[in-house]
Length: 423
Image (tube, rainbow, N blue to C red; front, side, top):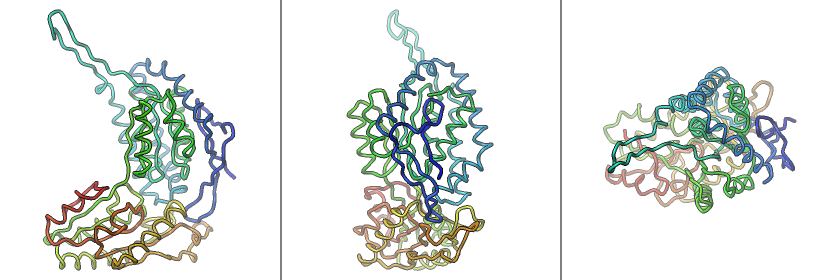
């Protein structure tokens, strides 16, 4: 069985006493690899490599750093299919979604290629008698990224291109559920000419996270994940004097007005709610129709679109979305759906228990995959858990409102209120 290692100081390493953790193919439910979870010593080794590489990299000219970024961009483009297939293989999302997230990540790399303009300092002559004022932008040192499973390429690429372009070094701790993409990116950085130690990958769990947060050598940490973990990382990291960016859970709403073009709205709601099995930070999980007639018409339109969705292997043509990433994710979504039923919400379409045992992809049965069908709730109220919690699955809930004013209060007052669309 394939073993997924760390990438430290420009080479693959098993580390010291790495603990193996299974990596599944979520479409089949079968273990396909094991990833070595780093010990405290392993993480400290990655941090030390970044620390040692920092003086030389931070003094490298901006033009030389930018040259490496341009080369990395070209290599990622050339290897896009390979990277996307690795995403689908371990996460489960359809190939088009995997290619899409890679493109979003590349946009940040392209932005970082223009970093010389943003790195300019400022000069003011004679701010006081005989005094001139200069300002310079300096890299802070070793930066770290702790990233989630749902975008194994895009979210890390939000972080490390800017850090590396500005002269910092980087330690990435990707999700242990889909860790292979990070290693592909590390290899491409090396091929692009990035010096060893500037970019490192260490796999792990809470042990790795705590080591990063406690290390006096790490200057800044970025995180994307659940709200409880975001709060933990922010509090522990800032207590250690670090710069911390911690992004947590989100609940995104779509308000549908009586004069909305319902077919247009339903098309976009279905795509945003069920695409990538709802495992997106910006998944549209709440529809707020204004008025009873709007609600009934919208419900019928979404039910029609659900009937046209195909669930299956992410590499299979014609599939709209694939499985959830893990059995634990499937169990959680099933639990929340049941809580919605018990709370009295109307379950219009129930995606639980979807049976793909008669389907295969390249000779492998999908019967054991972590699949759930699209699910639609109506007449959900704001105190129900399916409204309050981020479900992170292909579940759309409808909360009816009597007026526009009532509708806009919902996202504004929600603890995870994030994105809003109005039709």
